[in-house]
Image 1 (cartoon, rainbow, N blue to C red):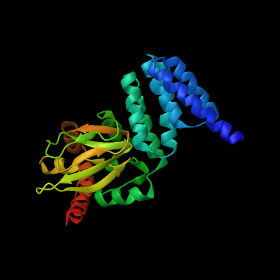
Image 2: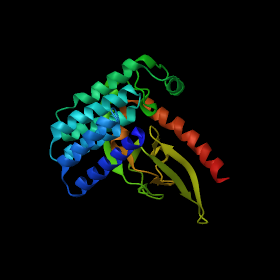
Image 3: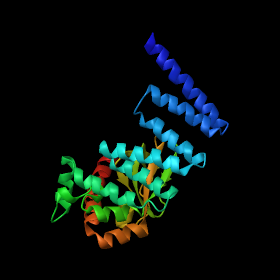
Image 4: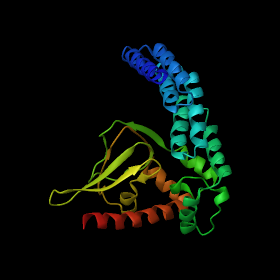
Amino acid sequence: MLFFGREESKEKLQARALKYIQKQRWDKAIAEFRKLLALAPGDMRFHRRIADLYVRAGKPREAITEYRLLANHYVQRGEPIKAMAVYKIIVRLDPSQTDVYKQLARLYAQQGMPEELAGVSSAVSATPDPQNRVRVPLFSDLTPDQFSEVLSKMAVHNFPPHTVVVRQGDPSNSLFLISSGAVQVVRREPDGKEVVLATLKEGEFFGEMSFLTGKPRTATITTIEESEILELSKQDLEEVIAKYPGVERVLKAFYHNRVKATLKAIH
């Protein structure tokens, strides 16, 4: 009986919180989410909602406190892309807090590189040093300070479900990394047939094909669910590659793998 009462209580609290949000009564909504946290301590979804509501309420200091808690949680769980996105929000709220970039990069360097990424790094780097590299596949060839520099150039976007992020035929202007959520990659053939090439999830990136070939987008990317995506502009990516050629080697390695997967999907 206690279990069902607990669930019912959570449902009522969530319903009240949503009503307060609709009425733009941010403090009231925050109070309801605090109660939800009391029922489910450590539930980061509620911390995220509270942080976002503090932003709406015009309370950046309180929001930053919640966002830092979130970022630290993602670091501990080994979810670098999510942590990156949260740190970007912190800097957007308070541009003076650029120290978070170096903090994130050094944390990952201290933790070392996961075994599954070490193979990628060794395949594309002449002098891999997993103990001094960051834990993001695309940037696994960078030192913490270099990674911090790249991170500062990225923009954060939140997309609702079923939103087109890039459209087939569009010019290539950016590279994207998925912080959370998922996207579907669909290519339209000359005969009008649509072919699903892949589903990409958090930690994966897209846009490298058009960047490397200089050709328009070869597929349409649409969100499957609510997604948070990091964007690195073409100009910034070109600057990164000019300074850190290892990034281009990683891009090319992924590009060749995806070309093979695309050919397999359409034949």
